[in-house]
Length: 345
Image 1: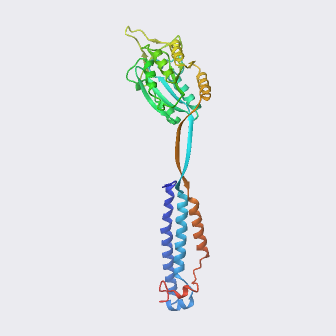
Image 2 (image 1 turned 135 degrees about the vertical axis):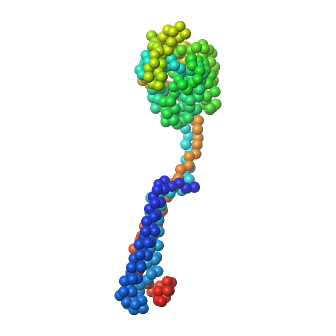
Image 3 (image 1 turned 180 degrees about the vertical axis):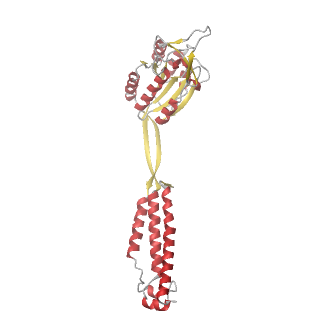
């Protein structure tokens, strides 16, 4: 197996045909000048030690040196270096409320963006832990399966919005039910579910599901976003404000944070409730909680890596350059007996 790090340097090999062409032209010019100076027979007597073979050999040596230098710059990586990596950590799943009530702007810039900020900052604090994301409104949707790729988690997080879930409303029980089957490692003893919401629950079945989750080893932490006084839900069309959401009577809907609902879920889920209006409060709490959590070895993989081989080609290039510099164009004694190119004729 091999890998080429910088294959564009193979373009340097086009220098070799140029060198060969230059050699042929210079040899042709030299022959013309020799004929103008004297006949071939006379010139051979005047220069009995000249050798075309050695000139060709020097050209080959120089060309091979250029080939080796080009390959060294490409840096071929060959061979396999095996390395075993063991990871220890916990599984953290974020359940993000993307119902339209989360668009209320009682917390700047709005509840949903504040929740995203909190999740992103918690992800930055994770070490070798794994992370997953669930979004929910009237139904729950797995946005990102459990992974160690924190960059991907933050990228998927930025795309979360109410349009991702077709049925609107706020059914926390849907998110909890989804979480019960979301964790993919049955041996993992520390499973954390971090639920971020304004607490509106249209189903009122969350407490019993939270108890079931706790029995399965899932600790539920809830983060409340919004204020108790509440705010109307803005409606935007193509990014332009078009009014506020109204009920069937034509009155503007005021959405509030229901902290009691979230506190009850956290209590039944063997976790804690946090106020999410200040970003640093839940981030610091979750960081301390996860740092002190008992880590579980959840992955043991062998990664193959390629070893750099450029040094061998640099060595060969130096060898051919030295050989070229030590090679004279005159015949040696044993070569005088060999007429390889019919130079005597």
